[in-house]
Image (cartoon, rainbow, N blue to C red; front, top):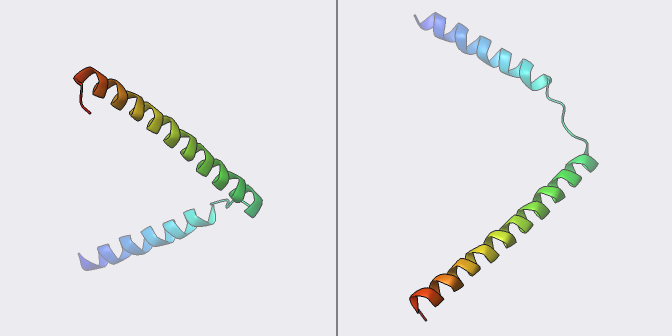
Length: 67
């Protein structure tokens, strides 16, 4: 029973190593472009969500009369 677990773990890690060899890593310029895109899109979505939240807060405060 113990030997089967060792064989299974060994084949798992050798398969994992083989899968990592198939990965195509992006070049540095592509990586920079994608990173800046993610940062900009996140900032824009954050700003939009913040504006919507402030709008709802303004509406609720005026309806309920909370100062």
